[in-house]
Image (cartoon, rainbow, N blue to C red):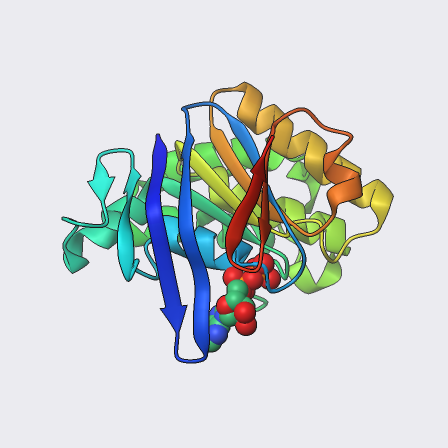
Length: 218
Ligand code: ADP
């Protein structure tokens, strides 16, 4: 499903990550764990091909960083869902329209949009908030909206960058339950977190990152 082979990514300031090699099979749940600045976001950016490796290569499904053309990147992104620590919701539209956004971009029919959006909002327990503005929701609810938006297009891979980083422990648990439920239906999940203690409480493979290197694969 996802394969990184000897990946190195450098920034003007120096190495982001180097010698990153790992594989994620379909339907796996994988944690990338390490302190802030370890290189977790850089690895996720490489997987959604926002950054290309300076050395090595990456394969995501049928897409390879060696061969993908710029105009094909949107097709890769449509097969992925991405969730960020800071939610990145639009406050100029309601919850329903936030989740509908990608489907509108790809020109889905109104009937399909309605059905899919209502289904994923139900999945994350927010059917009753579909006409609220995201600014009226709690942090945990906003993250649930951003998860609904990430899964509305039925991605085969869900990437989550510190999805619980802004949330209290109880709310974080709720988000983890939702992510594992999505994974149980067959979606591969790769989640970056600095919270090693939290990871211990969950099944899933753990890849430890420090100083831009893999230090241990559990
Ligand atoms: P993490 O997600 O684990 O906090 P990052 O992948 O964001 O780590 O960062 C890894 C390293 O790359 C850090 O040393 C960071 O300072 C550096 N880095 C990340 N993004 C940039 C950037 N846009 N420009 C320069 N350096 C960066």
